[in-house]
Amino acid sequence: MKKNRYTNILIIFLVAMNLILVAVLLMGPPVPPHHPKQIARDLRRTLDLNEEQHEQFLTLFQQHHQGMRELHQSLLQLRKKLPETLLMGAEESIAFRQKLNELDIRRNQMLFEHYAQLQQLFTEEQYRKFVRLHSQRPGPPMPN
View 1 (cartoon, one colour):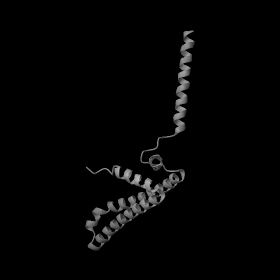
View 2 (tube, rainbow, N blue to C red):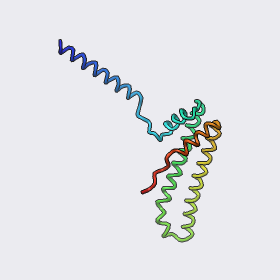
View 3 (tube, rainbow, N blue to C red):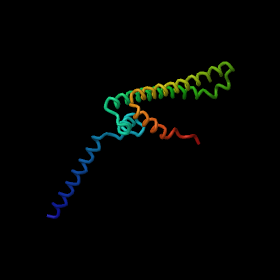
View 4 (cartoon, rainbow, N blue to C red):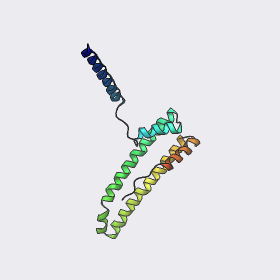
């Protein structure tokens, strides 16, 4: 009799564990905190965005993120060549620095355009909240 009781408890425990495992698998992997979808979810809640604003924000953010990633890759490729500029002639060195400056200007333009698009998307109150939140976020880590 005791053996049946332990068997029943073990079966109930295993079924419960399987249900928990299935629930976790159905939820999918966790979304990283800086992932566009997670940021959009957090802002939707914080700024009280409606469904249309949420979808438009997600689209704008993904486009901006992709453009900035491509620009960052271009900057990294140029910066790898930075030590070689000392071996270049004066004209090539100046042209190289101009390329770096142009990419930096383009980055600032992209940021300005992105914020202008967000200002059009959000209500005035939502944009003010967004600016406050954005100013409180930590910046990139400083080099040691």
